[in-house]
Amino acid sequence: MKITDVRTTLLRVPDLPCIQDATIRHRDLGRGAMFVHIDTDEGHTGLGMGQGAGTRDVIHGVQKPLLVGQDALSHERLWDEMF
Figure 1: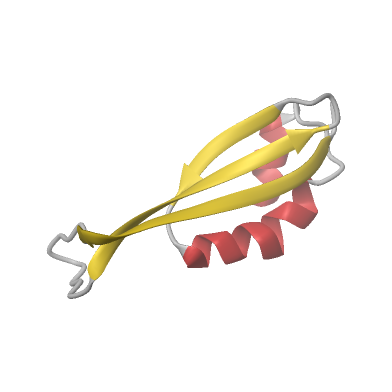
Figure 2 (figure 1 turned 60 degrees about the horizontal axis):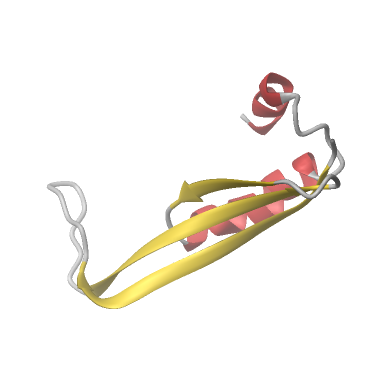
């Protein structure tokens, strides 16, 4: 089972207050979430979650080229290559 595509969906709710802690100061409004879809040649899709547009850039620019064409069931090897 080979990975054929890696896609992301970035969602944002602009009217909710941001989540904030002592290390992050947000003054604007909005909360978001990102979903990562990993498609295979057998029609299965894996789903993961992440945060932010910067993470999305890393997934599309760095991780996707490493994953497409690889065996989707080689979890440990794929983790080592991505890490």
